[in-house]
Length: 106
Image (cartoon, rainbow, N blue to C red; front, side, top):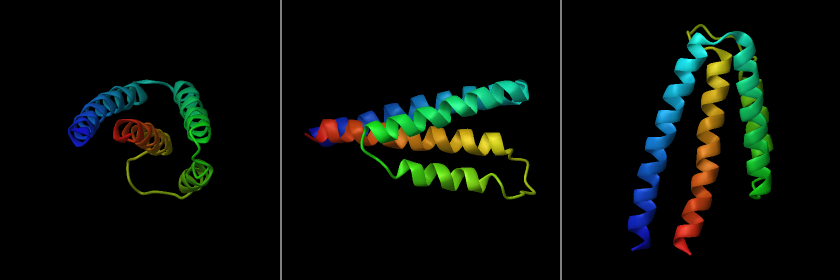
């Protein structure tokens, strides 16, 4: 029975996060650089705080790796802001979903 709720919750979370990412990506394309910077900063802090509060000190390593990853020049159309925001949303979702899975499995 717990496996059913785990799979169902995963599908719900994925649907929600895909919708959020779609909205954010559309907003980034129309927003000015200042708005992107604010959103990026909020997501960075949220990612670090949630990860550390929930007992995942590895978020600091992931954060550093993502920040370093934006320093390399890319020849693709993906901007550094889009790269960072997408990855922070994905990592934050994984952390929150892992906590939900732990809760559902107990």
